[in-house]
Image (tube, rainbow, N blue to C red; front, side):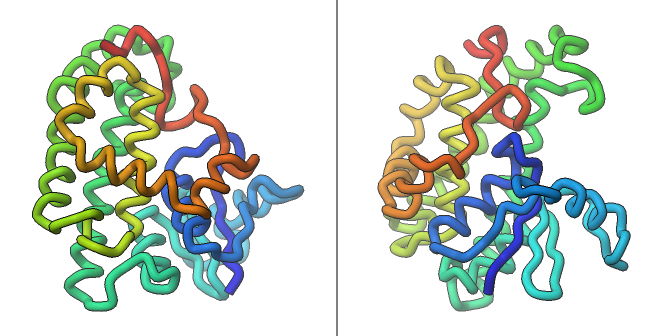
Length: 236
């Protein structure tokens, strides 16, 4: 099957968690909004022009007649098909649970630069962002990454679901990469407490298809329009 991924064309954002799974599996897919006319098609689908079940927002995936939205939902669908999920139901639900925790974390990461409202510019909420980011780096990042470090240890490694790479490992890679970009100083200290996750990040980066993807123009660079943004005044 050829998949069609719809996401904003100028950022990694939430869509990157899906892109990494598709790339790692060598799946045939199109990044549709980066193609001519793709943005118009994406907006038409969101507005329900032809679909009775329109997605609220990107990313969403078209697979045959199915249109699937929400990152964790998309990965729950793709995981077994891309051989990035366990075969048993309990394992798939556990993996889904972990990915939903990533979704919670991503929301908090976004709020470091938009704690008051997404419709406001960062410049309109700088004092609140500094206060939010301080607590986020001191309390929330260690709590989330510490939880995933515990999951890794309990699995026996070398990946979060033991011996086989799954899409949660790809998501951990993206979290660490993004946090390194946004908070390079703080992450130097934080990473010392989660060495297992850093090893997972390194293993994912070395996977042949991921390595090729990261070196290709398909990998959009981090920038100050996405979830992970580097504002030096928010780092510590």
